Length: 404
Image 1 (cartoon, rainbow, N blue to C red):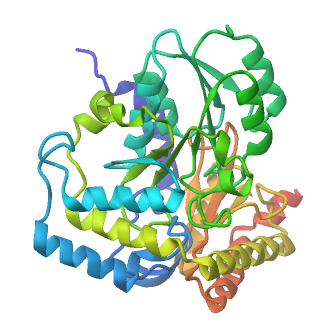
Image 2 (spheres, helix red, strand yellow):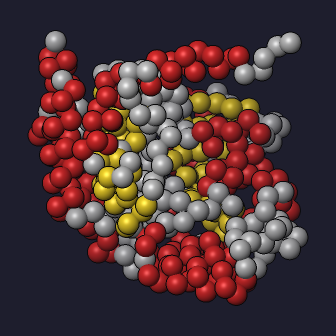
């Protein structure tokens, strides 16, 4: 009998080889206690969290927690139903109203996760005979949305306006076209040149969807994302986002000014056939979103922390994925998987948690330690992080290895 899991044997062997070297499993970390947005207990040790996407530090905001506690007491633990059946509570509508106010858009739809938002919107918008044109480095949820639908998929080189235009020129002018972009790309922390890309898409008659999962909260005057900072809001048809980054809870959404947008509630399968978010979650999200409308000081602090971490690591001799700080993600390039794992473990033992990233999550041949800053990080924590990076590099011989 054929073993359906045998196709993963090579990956299992690779993982086993790493772990037999006395290394912790980077993908099986347990947070024994979470003390704040920036500190947790891991392996019994106080640890600075530098890999959580908790950009605006909203997970422990007192107003957010109070809203969740009140909704939990009034509406119970869950909805046990889809949004189109019994799963729409007052809180779901309030959350969508908060999103419309935050983005200045006419329509908002909330999904149970950010993954489902991309899966649902992408697969529903573009069907047979249509084309989806997407950046080659697009998130897995975007690719999965493409695969769930029936549209033809066209990839263009990462952040290349020239390649996007070349691909669009080859498509039938009368065909439906959806160009999908991301404000911030989560692996390298680089941002898309949205002004150029959106202009090209519109010149070729395409609709534009921008995923602002990692841009919401601190890009643009109102924190709406890179598309706002780039001044292309009037030319973007759909914005996708998530609650699991800057908002500080879980869920996903899409906002739009399209006059026919509401029909998506009846035809989008990952919306129709998924249980809705628990009342406490949407109450937390709505409160957090409304507070983010006035988070100018937090945005300024987050940018300051990003510049300091980026500059500090460069000064120590680390190679970073971007020449300048482009977002709250600072990715440190590593030469290979073994070195990446050893550096990751050395940092963890020193009391710093970062994300270890490798292909296929990253581009082919790219290994990195991904740092995600939080507006709640203190100057003392940032200084400790820089010291621990320097010490971890010395313990693992990273710079000596690079010199050889």
